[in-house]
Structure formats: structure tokens, C-alpha cells
Image 1 (cartoon, helix red, strand yellow):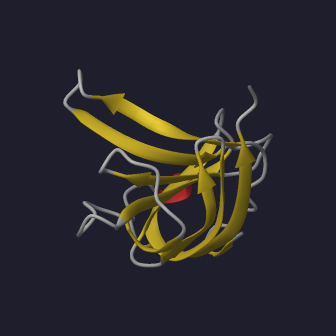
Image 2 (image 1 turned 30 degrees about the vertical axis):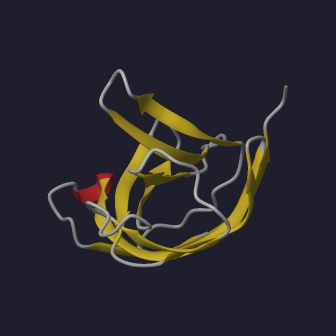
Image 3 (image 1 turned 45 degrees about the vertical axis):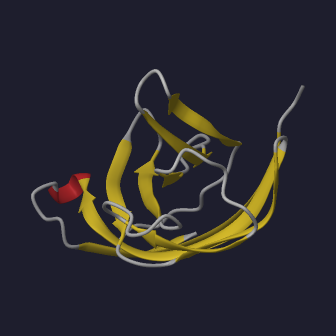
Length: 138
């Protein structure tokens, strides 16, 4: 759920996995809470290329500090008509379960960024929170 300047309730599918790889030289692990209809999308990304184990992780909006930090961002609105991009300024991700075929957890972060109503103003403030569960279909 996103509150304050942008109203959003992420819903829809959850996807997770490694993006990139050794041939690309850079690999990241990404959890994507997809936008559904007019909902928002949440992206949680770790730059070490590995699935996070159960535990608590720091969320940032820029380059993660330390091996356990992850980036977090919210793309407000639908994929066809986004209404803003907001990045975490701090926050936490708690992975409650993780395995090769599943991941679940919850997150909470304050963020800032811009909305399409005034893209030159990057001062929009939001509070984002939610939970997810995903199981890979074979």
C-alpha cells in the first residue's frame, strides 16, 4: 500500500529470479510485484546476484550499501499510464521463506520521487508497505 502524495495498492503477480549472469558480468536478484490493471508495481533488487535467505534487509533507493542491502522502488499507476516513480529513502524487507521454487516476505519503506503531475518536482513523499508470496510453477 502506498500512502501520502500517491495513492497505490500493489496487487497482481509476483516474479522473482536472477537477472543477468556471469556472461553479462553483472547479476542481480529481483522480486517484482507486477502492476495489475491500474495498480502499481514494486521492484526489490539485490545486486549480489543471489536469492536472499530468510531475514531482515535494509532497503535503499540508490546503490545498496553492504552485501545485504537491496534497492526498492515503486512505479505508481499502470504499466500503460504510469503516474510516478518513487525510490526508497530507507526501509526494510523481511524475507520469511525462500527456496529455489518459492519466496515470501513483507516490506515497508518511505520513498520520494516524482509524479507525472509535476515531473520536475522530485519531492513527492510516500509510504509504501506490503507483503508477497510467490511459488514457481513447473
